Image (cartoon, rainbow over all chains, first blue to last red; front, side):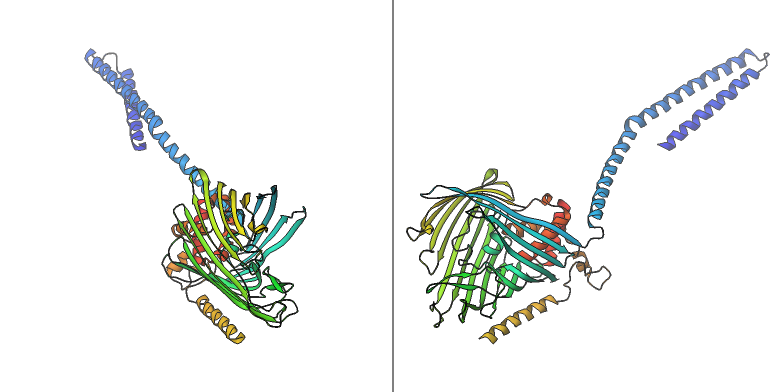
Length: 424
Length: 106
């Protein structure tokens, strides 16, 4: 386009020069020139004037074309390019500022919940207010310190503070991390992955999966965990093996009242517990897990006795359906010299189905069955619930629990529960 | 009995150690472009967006509702995914893939 523009300028300049020369020539022509020559020159000048006018018009038109069509297109493209460049630069600048000279990252995660419960035959109460911050302090991609603090309000209004877990995780390579400290029990699935209120689809834990029931809660020791290489397939597998202090047995008269698995830092029997879980994902959105643990446990001031755990779990998602289930069993062996000499066993299982409904609603049903050595603790429960998701991590739940247990105990009383949970 | 269990545990640890020291397995920041690793390994240390998207959809929903990538900043995702790597037993490669996906879509 600029070449044409230059050509036009050249032509116009030539014409103007020709015109000037012609005019000069005409002015210097002697008055004695013939009328014929005069008329020819006059005609030529007129013709040149017309050509100049045409050229001027052409140039004017070209100017209009440049303004109306070419220049706006170029301008828009440039603006778009500039916008993209600015976005890129802004992101790079943000990233550079964020990570400049830092190998460490601090992050606060966690969850909180508030709840209401009403047991059949009693007046209800706003029974839950709990805050569980999780601190992450990461060094490069090699170390993670993580700790969850559980803060909750008790019935009398006092505040209970506990350390759910505290571990220092050393990433040894792509398939293994060493975890040391107090950790959530890797046995089974509910306690280590599902119990946070914003993940659990019902306001309560399945029967037998609460604290000091059939499912181990935590332990203190060291653990190796990670993924098992499976090649390029979509299959995945993971593992966790640990050695820890193990549980303590709580004596009540001539009975073992409960197995305390809160992750004590002492080891009364002096014998460790070894265990682990292997999880296998044969297809996407399905996992099957198997857990075992074995060791010794003891009542305070007594000799040790055998302690074993066996568990199996699965989870499967299909379209809007979420299915999961788990079985867990803890038992302690016979000890003749004990105040509670018999063998004792706690076991529980549950099956849960959840279905996502339109408009962010979700229906949930769960059946669980807890068998304890103590009849007053046995419980079979059917819980049905309806959830509304304000966001994927903000969930409101309403449920009704049909409970079957020893008559007259709280295990037998039906309940309605409501809860708001927020994961962050 | 105790010796048997201890031996068993040591064997398990040994097997895991063998896995841990397998060739070609390295953390992202250990791998260098000019190292004698294959090109594929070097590429993988950066994470793969497409693989990450697929893994995010398949693995994260096993336990919880999937969070919007825009919920967290790049550095927050880094710590969160590190946490999930430990908790869910993800491999280093799966972790990097998911992280790349989340950081490019947040």
